[in-house]
Length: 266
Image (tube, rainbow, N blue to C red):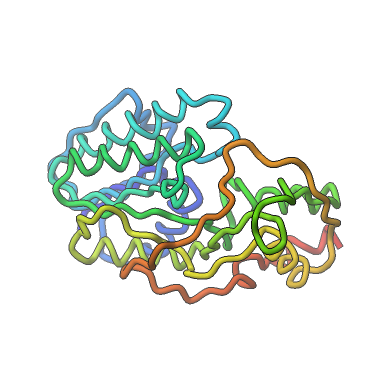
């Protein structure tokens, strides 16, 4: 099968290519530098499946620069889908689309409409909070924990949310489980459904996540609280688990860092 993976140099794209290495698929994975999806289409009728992972993903940044997010995530998605008219499309959307309070979430929600309008053979994955492995471009909670290793302090955004400990609730899923779901979607018929939620099916507060991180990796920083972050949702939970998803990894697996990396912070 001939595959195109956009965002091939990103977090999911890199790990997905590793997992597909010993298969019979022929893979083309253009980087963002080699293909500006906002301005260029690449017509190719021979592609069997396109996994569209490229996009902008930072909530805070989207609040400051919404037009960039609408351009890349909406116009860019249209160009990608148009480039492969006969291909099955697997689109990386977000769990934030269930409650789109940021330009990032709204851009992904609109991009889903683009996929449904331009393709007759698609699977729309709404990814929840992905962790584990070695992110090539760490963002979100993983990036914040890495910064905290250096500063010795982790700041949780908001302590007054209406949750059991006052911090936001999220579903965290391991990168390997996510990639396994994508591979399953490559090999099976397209869902052609409104969306497919991809997560672990378990929810934890930010404080629970951080406490688990410190339990697994050691007490490497202190916790403090700051103001809420613009664009944040109080809760992000799966309404149901996609049939493409078979989560095997735990929260401990997600937060665990490599010992060779950790030793310099101990």
